[in-house]
Length: 237
Length: 131
Image 1 (cartoon, helix red, strand yellow):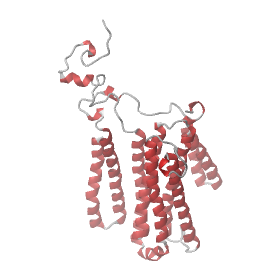
Image 2 (cartoon, helix red, strand yellow):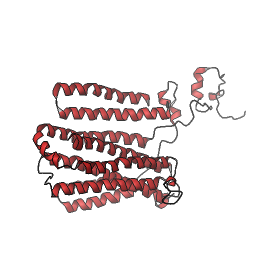
Image 3 (tube, one colour):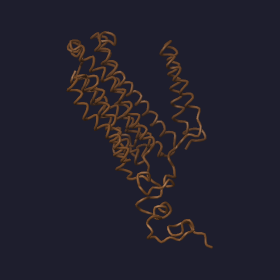
């Protein structure tokens, strides 16, 4: 007897005709079936896990937003006087830098998705940049945001007298923007780790691309949270 | 992923209906903020699963005629064993002890966290695993 791989007709040693529909499904993994490829594409466990983690992060920030609006409704007079201390145009400036960094981050992810770790041209040939260059640029922009926030805090603490313990407004202002800044800082470190990995391997692997993608999810999330914080603290006041 | 997306979408739709009603009946900023962001929690996951559904189509578990064996294959990379999670727990413990008792313990803890994170992230990128 000739040993043949199991096919639609010979599976289980019993000969079936292809017209028998109930058996078609059983054999669909061995027979070539264009509608159901043998190796199914799955959602990446890392990406799904990251999104669920970010959803829980949203609830963390929900606590901070709820604190902000609760204090605001209980102490409108404090808000009336203390929001005058904010430098809105300055905050808008660093906000624009942070929001733009999401765009450079996404261009870096596109490079990662096509498997390009580093640049193929010279440093100033922006069109030839790979993931590494775009992520370094994103890192610099994120660092400018954090530096800008540090100067803003210094101005408020040293010259305006707004501190964590001076009044309810100071407490929630530093808690909300500070926890956000902490998230941005952790994101910056994640960028460094992703960039670092590209230097340690000869070729850019799928795993590295996945890391780059989930770090970008995190970065976009932190960015959106900042837009909501900016609208709450600086625009609505 | 259609069913998963719908499950989270139901949460989002429910909260989208309930939140404005809550606000107009109570004028309570705390609960309204919490409900609004809970809407975001459901909507965000539902939206992502919808995108995945569009990208990968029906998985074997989504089809009536799906078979268990169709799910065979590579799921991802899982470390067979590693000391870094233990280090992670230990250094987190030092950080929290430092937060409670003394700032110098906190600094030691943060240094341990840095070592752990770098060791964990690069574990399969160095030594015999270098590629």
